[in-house]
Image 1 (cartoon, rainbow, N blue to C red):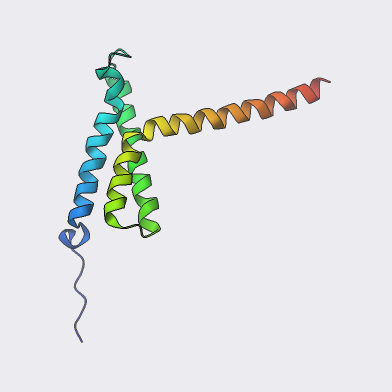
Image 2: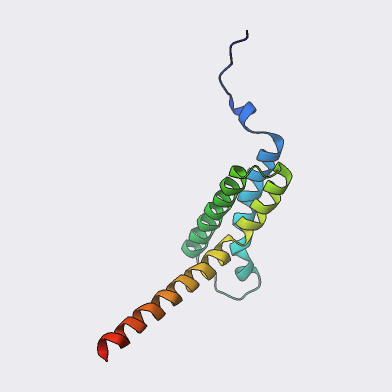
Amino acid sequence: MSLKQPAVWSDFMTAIQQITAVLIVVCALAGPAQVYIKGEEKFILIKYIVEVVTSALSGVIVFLLLRVIDMPEEWLAAFTGIGTFFGLKLMNVFYKILVGRLRVIFRHDEKEKGE
């Protein structure tokens, strides 16, 4: 009977997970930079940093969610990269939907109270 050795960093990080970590960083930097590279917006460093952090968090969330459902690591890396690159845009869409619905609900309640 062999004793189980404590896990070390090299055991934890497989090659695919290392690629995924690099994808998160690269896509978090590249995704928010699109609008500045295209010249659609004026570059503001603080806004860019916030967008990079938000995109990176989005990628980590996608990674953890896909990891829980035991998705193959190759797909996990691909979807994590996509989730990170477009993470800020997806979060903005969800925010607008949520806020829009809340406004509709509150406006409806205000109309009922006013009548």
